[in-house]
Length: 472
Ligand code: UDP
Image 1 (tube, rainbow, N blue to C red):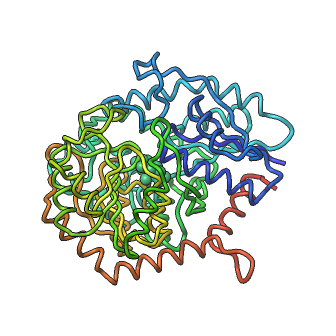
Image 2 (image 1 turned 120 degrees about the vertical axis):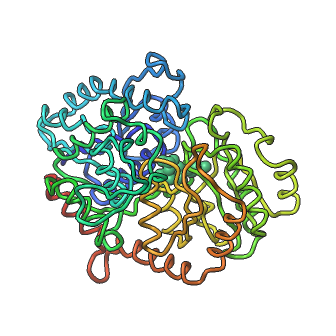
């Protein structure tokens, strides 16, 4: 039986779907050997979260953040100050010799298949060297990946004088606005560290043998998947095998989640679909001034909320959250009046989205967050902050399940309390968006249908992937 080696990037939004993929592979093919490879702290956290009889193997690669000038314990983007993100990406390439050694040791008589993150595109070389099959697993939407690949391949965009421009080399016209470009992309001149890291990773994706995507054929067939296949020059087959989401509340590597029971109890005390959940994911945060506008906007909306807060841009992300960053008395008053629950650091997100009282999700549009919302029929209020999140938001808006309330977290990125209140009100009371979200949920659930009737699209695509990869 084949051995599949999974190698996610060191970030929660990548680790979570890879763990779900491992779980899926082992459920579908119990005789497979599946090993997930990461750095020591991530592996230790995973080991603690898995049941003792889990068949998933874990392998840890030595990694020394401090030798790259990073905080010594920081093995996940969530624990890295934003100004050091690029250093962290570069440091991740130091895992190569140890990964190569591991693959050399894993090579045997059975077929070997590497499934890596696209941030570890260099694993294609390792696979070639050792005669292994190679696949990239994209943990984002197909539309987001295609748009971002096009954007990064055609750097620099800082030279573009127009505020809007069409992305090159895509079968459909995708017009990008300057406000949808992160500061890295805006500053990239093709020779800077961002370009030097990302461009080669994307080139490697062209050399892979197969691409798995955490999305659903029916949802992204018309635009995203067509664009992705075209971006990759149809070199490798693309298999949408989503939605793969965390089955339970994931644990943050450095700060434990707030007690699920307290939050669930609080949600229990509110009517169905009445609460708005606000979170900007595992690694992004907003400006202090934006935080004030958001707080006032939530107040003005009159809707109850659960808001996961982290220190604003410019402050140490791992530091204790300071109440000073919120309007005076906001946290205590809203809590006392049962109108709001401010959670510091990390929340059991899936448990919150699954709860029937949650009626909308104000999200940074990280793809895992969007999937976790949509699989529970929760419409999205989008506030994309970085990377391909801008394109995830666009795609979901086209599907009719997302309204953008704001964009970006640069000093120049504006958000107004009035707009927050207006969009929250419209989404919470909008019947059409809720109906669309219910439809998308049904499509997502059907993707994994098996048994009676024809198999769902993701179940079929996984079978096809097994065939292409030589996994019997
Ligand atoms: N997450 C969580 N609690 C939090 C924040 C995030 O459990 O307080 C999880 C979330 O459920 C998701 C992942 O972390 O699975 C974040 O991934 P996403 O792609 O949404 O965003 P990223 O953090 O990569 O920007």
